[in-house]
Length: 278
Image: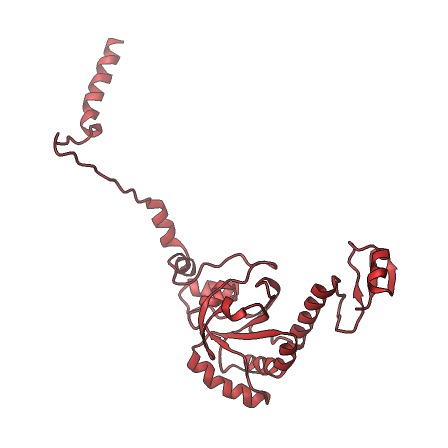
C-alpha cells in the first residue's frame, strides 16, 4: 500500500507542471478570455456540398420549408419593370409566380407567350403575374421582343432576373440533379418550371413543378385560380376536371339539410358525395 501511495505521489508530481495554471503577477489584475473553435464543426462545414456552404454563408438565401399554407417568402429583385420588394409588389392581391430555365429557349418562349395571351383573363380575376428566368434584365428585355412576336401578344407582366439563383433556391425551384451538378462544380443549378399561386394573405395556395423538357398548360393555371377563388367565396370543394359553371361539391362538414338551405338544389349521389350549383 505504501508503495502504491509513493507511485501515485510521484505521478502527481510528474503531471503537476502540465496541469498547473500559468502564474500571474499579483498586480495589475488581467482577465484572460479564451476562444474555443470546434474543429469538428469546421471540418463538417468544409465537407458540405457547395450549395449548402453558399447557403450557410448567405451567398444564397436559406431555403425555408414551403408547404401549402406557408407564407410566400419575401425577396428583393431586379425585374423588367424595375426593382421590387416581392411582398410590397403583392400588396393584397392574388398572384402567380412562375419560373423558367433560361431566356431564348424554345419551351420557355411558348410558355411566356401563352401567359401573355391569357393576361387579360388573370387580370379580370384580380390576379397579378410575375415570371422568373435565370438570366439578367438586359437579356430578359431582348427576349421579350421575341416572345411578343411569336405569341402575337405583349408581355405586360414583370420578369425577375435571377442569374445568381437566389430566388430559385429560396423557392426550391431546382431539381436534385441540378443541385448535385452545382455541388460538384459543374455550373449553377438550372431552374425548373415551377408555379406558385399566392392568395391576398400571401399564403401559398397551390404549387406545380415540371421538368425543363415539359411545357405547362396556362389554361390549367387559370382553372385552378377559378377553383381556389370559388372555394373561398362559397365554402365548397371542386371535383375532377371542374370548370366554372360545373357543379361543385358540398363539403362533408356541411349537413345535407344545411346545404339545401344554402344552395337550394343539392344532388346526393352518396351520403358523403353531394353536388350543388353556385
